[in-house]
Image (cartoon, rainbow, N blue to C red):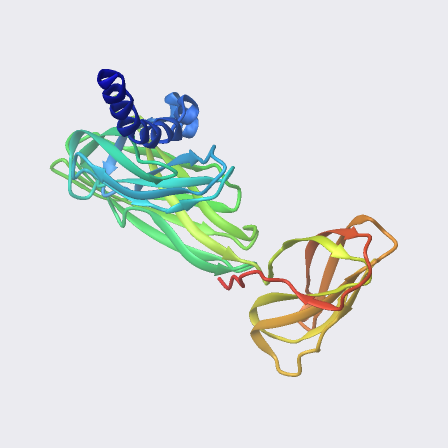
Length: 352
C-alpha cells in the first residue's frame, strides 16, 4: 500500500510538468517549413561590380492563425547587412527580410548566412543564405540610378561614372533597360594605361507610370568573364492624384446604417475636392474651400439597403487641370437588421 501511494504521488507531481511541456512541443508543427520554401532560402547575386547597389528580399509567409513576430536577424559575414522590413506578419500575409550585399566595402567571393529569429507564436530560427562575387576592377559611382520621387508626367536625367582598371582593350559595348520609359546610353570618357572611364546617361521619361521603380539596366562588355553587368534603377513616380485607401470593404453593415470613413487625397499640386460620386451609395461630405496638396476627408457612407451586398466605386472629382479624378473601389455587405444609427468604423488612418 505504501508503495502504491508513493507511485501515485510521484505520478501526480510529474503530471503538471508533462502537461505544461506538451503544448510547447505542438506550437511549431512540421508544416512550419513552409514559412519559406527550401528552394527560396538561398540567393546568388552572381557577379556584380563594386559599389553597385545589390539587394534581395526573402519572403516569409505566416501560415499560422495568429500574428508571426520577427524579433531579430543577424549575418555571419559583414559582407551582408540584413534588415527586417516587417516585424509582425499577420495570418496569411507575407513579410520580408532584406539582404543588402555590401559591394562598396568588400570584394571577391562572399557568402553570408542570415539567421532570422521568430518569437511568436513560438520561438524558432530560420537560416537564409546569400552569396556572390564582387568585382574590384569595375566600380560604379554612385552605385545605382536612383531617380528619387518624380511627379507623374515629368522627366528626370541621371549620370553614373564607371571606372575600370585592368585590360587595356576592355569596352562597354551597349546598355539596355527592360522598361520602355527609361532611356539609357553610354559614352567613353578616357582610356589610359589600363584605366578606363565611361559615363552612363539615363533619362526617366514622362511616360513612366505611377508607382515604385525597382529593376535593372544591363551593361554589355567584351569581357568573357563578365559579359553582363547589372545596375539597379530605383525611384518612385508620384501620381498626379492619389487616394488612400484605394480599396475599402464595409462588412456587416446594418440596413439603413450610415458609416463614417476617413480618406486622404494627395496631389502633386494644391487642389480642391469638388464632388464625390457613387452609383449605389449615398455620400455626404464637406467640400473643401482651400486648395491644398493633401486633404483629410470624413465621408458619411450609406449603402443601398435593398441590396444584400455589392461592389461600388467612389469617384473623387477635383478642380485640378484636365478634370483630374481618382477612385476608391468599395465592397459592402448588408445585414438584414433594423438601423441603429451612425457608426464610426474603428480603423487606423494611414497617411503616407
